[in-house]
Amino acid sequence: MAKYSFEFKKKIVNEHLEGKGGYKELGRKYSIPWENVRKWIKNYDANGDEGLTRFRKQSTFSFEYKLHMVELYLSSEVSYRELALSQGINNSSMLTRWVNNFRIASPDALRPKKKGRKKSLKTKLPKETAEKNSEGTPVDTSAEHIKQLEDDLLKLRIENAYLKEPRRLRLEGKAPLKKQRGGIAFRPLFR
Image (cartoon, rainbow, N blue to C red; front, side, top):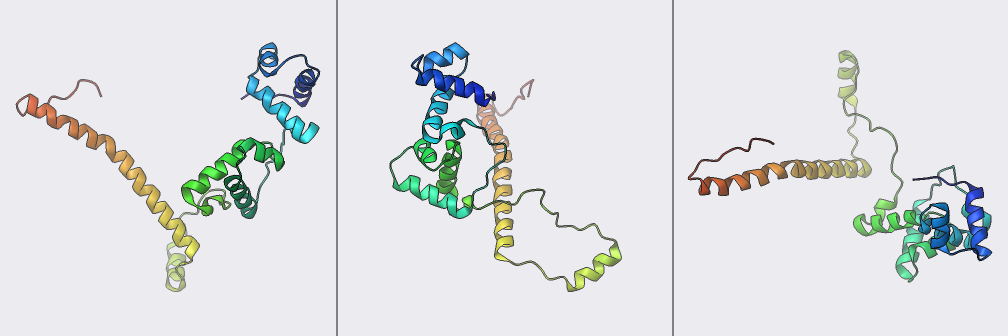
């Protein structure tokens, strides 16, 4: 996706405001998608020059704020873009993602996720140290840890079923071939 400078966006918005062209005409003139022109003009109308700037720092939103925005969208009859602009969010697709995640996986999908690599279950300690620790180490039975393990198990089951599906389909396809050819199934030359 192309990145456009603030000056370039401002130039196009000013041309539109001066009546030198519509969305599509300006898009053709500068060889950019007209949807970008429309988005920049709406952002400029709602937030002024701030609506045209790109944020280099990634914004983080709290769980409560995300939930509030989703509830606002579901309770009102406004579009994602209108709601995002009214709340000062430049990226309406982020609001779309929050609503879709909410609908698919309940409010828990809006909670912040841990970043980074997951810790492995096996520790790489010398044998003697591992034996000493295994005697008095309590097992983590917190609800959050159990929920994460259940989620991991579900993902693995889905992945397993997904990987087994082509084999099942291939075997189902061989059965009719055996009947047609009198019990002998021929393998294809190329796989």
